[in-house]
Length: 176
Image (cartoon, rainbow, N blue to C red; front, side, top):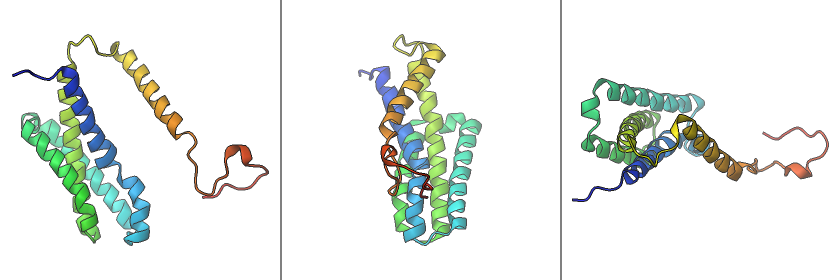
């Protein structure tokens, strides 16, 4: 059986990190205004959901440290991926803060487990490969270049009531 190239494994790990961290952990932030306006989520409930997610994340990270052989398995990897997706799909099906608290805690736990496994396995597959970046400084330069590219895409974003920068005149207070 032919094994995939190490970079295939690194791409799979990166995809899991995007799902776990970019979506699973942080999608709550842009959805929060919709939940407060449309689902009646109070500020205290919103804070509780964020806290539940962080508590779940902490528990998942600590589990990865306390039981590395148990956590770093293909079965745990796949279970965490399924749990992450299921937790996202369950949010609109639940209609009370307690259920949302449990779901966000589970999502945080799954995100942390995926993070721990993905980083560990990606490093395993990258070890000793000449196609890696040129050391730690190269990794920071690549990160700066990627952040620069994404920042360039985001540069012209503004609120719906804000006028374009070139068209603003006078000392009108910014709209919030």
